[in-house]
Every structure is written in C-alpha cells, then in structure tokens.
Length: 359
Ligand SMILES: [Zn+2]
Image (tube, rainbow, N blue to C red; front, top):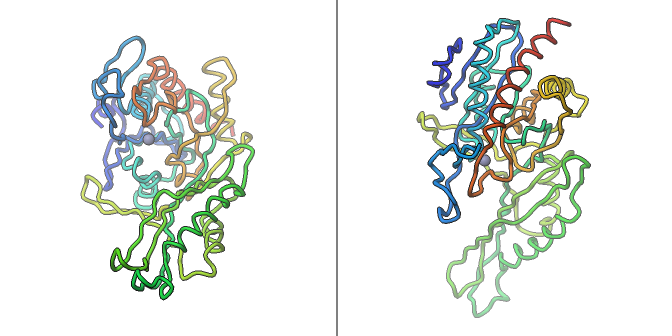
C-alpha cells in the first residue's frame, strides 16, 4: 500500500476483507493484476539453507518465504505501476493492482469479495502467481467433501447385532481408489483425481460396534468435471448404505474483523490458446522479449477459480519464479524474472489500451 502511494498511483485503498486495491488511469475498460499477499508457514527450518525470513538479495536472487509464492508478483506489478506513471500512461484503460488476502487458505475467496461486494469486474485479470515467465491459461479445479456413514452400535461382544460404520467407510474407501482410476482426462489439464485425506469414526465405547464414520475427500477436477458430477459419482458408491455426501464450506475472520466464506468448490478453468486475452498476452510477450512465449498451465490452484471459474472473467497467468519452489524450502526468485515481469505488465497495459483504440 505504501509503495503504491509512493509511486503516485491515482487511487490506493483497502476493502473490507483487507485486499489492497491500487488504480492507475480512468478508462472505461479495465485490466487488473492480482497478487496474493499471504504466504504459507516456513515449515521445518532445518530444511532451509538460508534465513527464510531474511529477504536476502544475493547472487541474482531474492531469498525467502513468499519470494516465489508470491510476493515477487506484487513487487513486479508495483514496479510496472511506476513505469506506467513515469511514461504518463493516459489511455482509455483503468489498471488495477490488487494485493489480495486469504488465498493460501481459500483460493478465490478474495475475488468473490472484490466482484460481489466491491463491484470490481475487470475485462481481463492477470494472475501474477509464478509461471517461470510463461503464459498460463488454466488449471484443474478442486473441491472438498465429507461422506458420513451412520451405523448402529451394539456391544462389542456381539457385533452381529450392530451395523459397523467403519466397515461401510472402508468398503467405500476401496471404491474411491478404483474411482480415481476411471476419472476424466483432458489433453491440456490432465486427469481428474480423488483421494481420501482423513478418516474418523465414533463409537459409544471401545467395546462397541462403531456407529459413525466419516471420510474427507480431496477431489481435483479436470475439464468437464463439476461439483454436481463429482457428488453424483460418490453418491453412486454409497447408494445401498445409510450414508450421505456433504459439500464443505470455508468461513473465517479476516484481519479486518470481517467474517466471510464460500463453498469449498474451486471450479476448473481454462482459456483456449486462441482466446483474445491469451493472444493479447502472447503478442505482448513477443513484442517485449523478441521470442515466442511458452503457453502452459499451473499444477496448483489460484484465484482464477473464482475470477474465471465463477465469474467468467478472462485470466492470464504470468509471474516471476518457478512454481516448484512454492510451499517448499529454499524458496527464491531470480531478480531478472522480477525485472522481466515488470516490463511485461507495463507493456500489457499499453498493448491492451492500444488494441482498444484500434477497434
Ligand atoms: Zn501458495
């Protein structure tokens, strides 16, 4: 926020959830850059070869937690804002710079707030999550479900009188393993997947048949798979049982004190390579770096799940750093990537404004 103010942005403010929103320009069309400001924990400190919170700049890299995931993107877009200001950017385009919150806990929630509560609905959003300076155009979606199993307890000395919920959950677990093998495949995004990440059970006593069990499913959704289709598949496995599928919800209090949440459904999204936004990015890349871009996808999930998945706003992925270092020890971002990303973001604003006046 301070850096945006120092750079002379036309407007800088914070919304109710804690997102920082900077703006340059007063155009009717709009472009937004998004970088989430929160980071994950450092993990086991012994795995790091340097101080994870040191922010040391050495040998051409910025070192530390969050350098790749993804404060590098924020640093680069603030610099891009400076460039736009230095070049007196005055076109029919409003450029927004969003430092978003809570992404690591609930990807996309911050943009649900921006779109639904702030009315910010840009024509194009650039996610600055790390892409190794490639142009990314999609990712698999995900969702979280519980399956509850209801049995009947009886004395542990006479299990035949009861119905054991753990046996129901176990049979289902083996079916989930098989289900994972036959999920849909997409040539670009890859295969959908499902795994059980937790199983818990309840019983009136350790000398009783368990009358309750619950499994937690981590479902990754490829193209064509939706919340509805994924729930139906699991319901098909438990038809004959006293069991039910539950979609989970996220609800948390932001540092501003606001309670906010959403369903834990993060839809799959992708843009075709021929999509005007991807073409705009590719053209900007070629003009800026005099070479063809690498166009690819993220393995992990981003705020694109709501920006494009919920609201259909075109998303371009372009960011400094290598995604494999996200959430890993020894996270570091090349300074040269930060410089290149800054140049690309500023050039993209000019290219988009130029394209609009051409029309
Ligand atoms: Zn992350």
